[in-house]
Image 1 (cartoon, rainbow, N blue to C red):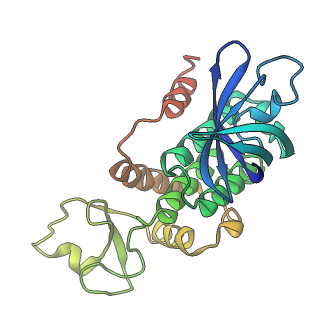
Image 2 (cartoon, rainbow, N blue to C red):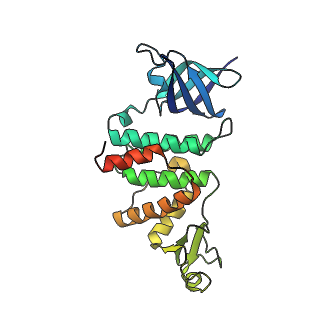
Image 3 (cartoon, rainbow, N blue to C red):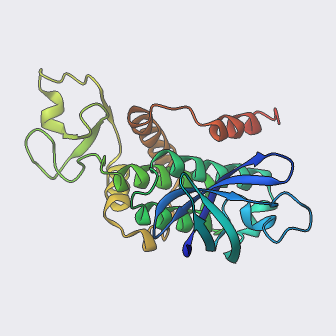
Length: 253
């Protein structure tokens, strides 16, 4: 039986000489695997439609273990992201992270929405690419139910002077609680008040309005460091595309 699903291609793997196996993140079915027969042929209508971060409406047939794509009505190729290597790698990284945080046939509408808006944000002139990546990673953790407690001190509940971010305890400490002997600074990192505010803002802002601000360089650097540490405590995998981006920064690719 044929059905239509709206979603985005996360990845594609060659199968045989002409076919492709793709992973699609959909509104209706969550993450699904699908075969695109003939998608690697030069004149195939599925050739471009089965590339990563292609968004559209997929007509699929459901089989025992996977789906088969019969046609695709593309709404957005994100072709502007395919012009620069940095954007290609970043887009692929976003897709790889979305793949990690989702499971087959489980609701992933918020992840799909976040992925779509984040890819769009990569080409907003006023937004730094690294800032978009940082926001994406932090919001992805929140969408998946692992957001740190940032709106009050995790020890006393105080809502002022929240300057010490604690990775392992997934929250923030006020000045007074940080000074207590029970913590003694272990595991907590001091951050600027502005950084705390931006982290809170990322958590509280709806995905549709997430990329509507920029920050000064010192805040961006601290924000990146805090999120990178926290992200690493919640993710037990080294992403291939992250390694490619690091190599690109070192001019090794």
